[in-house]
Length: 589
Image (cartoon, rainbow, N blue to C red):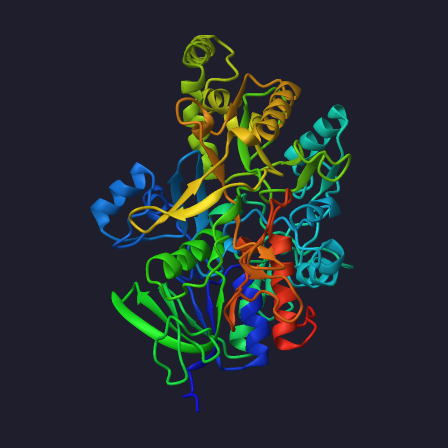
């Protein structure tokens, strides 16, 4: 007779996949589900904003030996322990930025809910899973996350008017490319975001959302990607996780870093040869208390994000030998989702890039229309916080120091002339300041966010220290990157910009991509010879060769998605949860 375990379900990670599983499985087993999250939870107004706090808001805890930027390492050496929300890693040919926080990537993503086109699922995806299969799950996820386009503006004088949206749409029309407003998971009030038939709340007004969590109608501050301090993002702690905790008694332990998953035998003893029928013992480190802990559960769901899930499972297979039967395909089919970041600088058209939600529209380059797998991507606009705008203003003189010096000299001479000329009209310091800042970089420059269909042929593996490494086939993806660069240069000419700048890491001699949407490594498949996790009915989301061990996050994607991944990750998690619980999901949670 099997000894009782402590929990029916243990979930590792609280991003989109983990949040869906928390809500759905807590409803099935109320009070019997535990969520372990390595990051901290931030309350209203608690996200860092000062330069010093932002510099420390990175992930590098004690004992961490992953490859990270030198600046992170230096701060780690000084402070000894960093548990901020940005997990930044450096690999050969590609760098990654992911999250370490309660709510996972939902706290730092750009809010876009976009379903990939049907052709994406027609190559290297299991036959049982396609856009039509996922359609009802996409619908539910979109309703729960309250994804809608930005509310319309009455005109240029309306506070809801976003100038960069207008410019990006104008560019798309000139380039002959389709453009659409994006559905974004941002709170504009219950009537607008959830009932979908009413007026938005005025900017900055608070009210409980449909699930009872207090939120603020978006203030258009551009701070979506550094943690929304007014809680206007429909992050999963305001819907899935909120309901799981408040209604179904989900237990949450933050700052809990899982290190090993071990199957147990019928005597509840650790047994690497067991298949999970009798449950699992999970070993984790309490980062706040600095102690080792363990817990047992009948089922384990790994939702630690693409990097976290692959790293944990690779260690369990190759270092701890606790899950020795994991597929040899583990770590294969890694994708950066074609992510590419660039800047169009010092244009002649106003964009006001510090205002509005981070993304409002997308321009389609052969992803949805006239599909071209090798060159398919979308171009999205971006805003950024005013703090970055001030930094950009300070950076301006370095972009063209002689021009800025001459402009400053002209303003000083002009001011002196007006100051001593009888009948002067502009003799004030305010006039001088206004002239110096009237053409700042943020007002006339654009951030270009692209994502597309890279070939998903990257490989995740462990280095000699037991930490994740990535082999990234950058050159074989050059047709995609070249198409992105060409469109970026075209956009720069459109706004009359003086410079087109890819992300600095792309420049010689580094030549690295940067991805904020890592995918793959635990690919869904019909067999362990093709992937790591089952896509078959009867074992959806279950790791091959193990029972009651599931994966639900971006690592399941067999290919790049081209579109922002959130919609598909959430829909796939709903699809898996449906079979585990037997209950068709709905937006009422």
